[in-house]
Amino acid sequence: MKETFTKRYLLVFVMLLGGVTLFAQPANYWSNSFNSEASLLGGAVVGGGSNITSIYYNPANIAEIKESNIAFNSSLFKLQYEKYDNAFGDERTVSNPVFKVEPRFASLILRPKKHPKISWQMAVFSRDFYSLYLYDTYSESAKKLGLAASGTYSGSFNLRGTYSDYWAGLGASYQINDHLYMGFSLLGSLKNMYYTNRRQTVLEQSGNELQFANRQDLSVWSAYDWINFWDIRMLVKIGLRYKLKNTSFGLNLTSPSVKIMGYAHLKLEHSYLNIVDNQGEPIPNFIEQYAADYVYCQVKDPFSASFGITHYQPEKKQQFYFSTEFFAGLKPYKMIDPTRGHSLFADVVTDSPKATIYYGNKPILNIGFGYLKKLKPEFEIMFGFKTDFNSYNIPKSFIRDNSESIFKQYVSSDLYHLSGGANFIFLNKLKINTGLELTYGQNNSNRQFINFTDIKWYNPEDNTALQGLRGNDMDYSTLNIGLFFGFTYIFK
Image 1 (cartoon, rainbow, N blue to C red):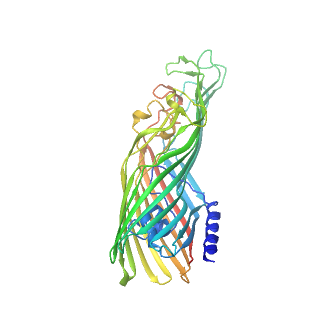
Image 2 (tube, helix red, strand yellow):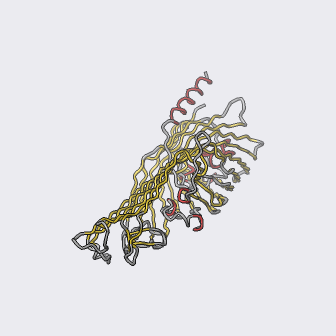
Image 3 (cartoon, one colour):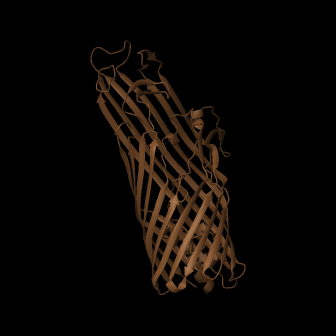
């Protein structure tokens, strides 16, 4: 009878997995928000208190959960707002408001009666989500812009992108003695990115007298990038937890991820028509196109080590949490390498530097703090704070030959997360948690996406036309607000 009961909950858990959707931002490792006590405590739960997220924060903490349970957490909504000042020239601002509703976390924890020192966990969850949509158009008379021509100048910029990261795995913990626990988890990651970016500038001349002889009346510069990839990877977490009377310490080591399989599709175009140099001499028309399917791609995860302390004050019915995690750096590597084909398909070979996309990360250290107060046996409040530093790091030498590289259009920043919420416990069987998370970040002096002011006929520095050189004076800021809801059902 008990075996049938357990299988029934296992079936429900598997059904929940099919509805889980997840998304991510690769430069910020601590943007994950699982909508559980761990998230509301700022992720500062390596030393204890990670509950259903133990498989991720510290698998040794799985043994901390005394009874089998099934949990499902979801976002009621999340509002993401990004602002880019001077993105397309002086005082031209664009914003990226995104409203999202998505499931976040599903977990099943089993405590076998015959082996009370062993605990098992299965989970599927989102590590992060990031989406971006920026669009701008510009139109002005050529005379007002200082171009030696009569007619109308127009420009357009359209960027769309999403990055998602699905995680799933199995974890276990073992109680060595009354004080020491160890744990292990094997996790798989499915990363996917869709990115498209089109930029165009057009000068349509008018009148009977054209400024330059033997020229058509339409001059055009255009660039287009389209990339879609997915990458499956595996990694291992090993955790320890040492518990004293009122304080516990945790250590978790995460291996670098290992590629299992995946590939990318991409298309790059760059052209200009009827362009002259700044002395009025015609430049030969130019078009460059590249497209490839099933080329090699990888999105690496670095080695990391986290340490945490959880301090309990039973007499005051409160708990304090602290965690820190060090992420090793990743030297710039070929994230998309079109000189290598996927092993299941024909090899793709090209020498085009613009088709190779690099990525890399610098070493960082994040910290988090949390506080929990039990006001009643069935009611708890929680607060948390954590840093989320930007790890993106690509030296200019790696993208010098690729002025339109997608990651020259990518802007990220240090983020700071503030959270708070409550747990409601009913009949010691059902725990419902809800909370709010605020995220803020700012990063000034970024390179502009495109410059629709200070127009030049031709810029040999970056092989662009009918636009100004991109300056490093774009300011970026972001503010995210998320409202979450989740439940955990305990069964024996």
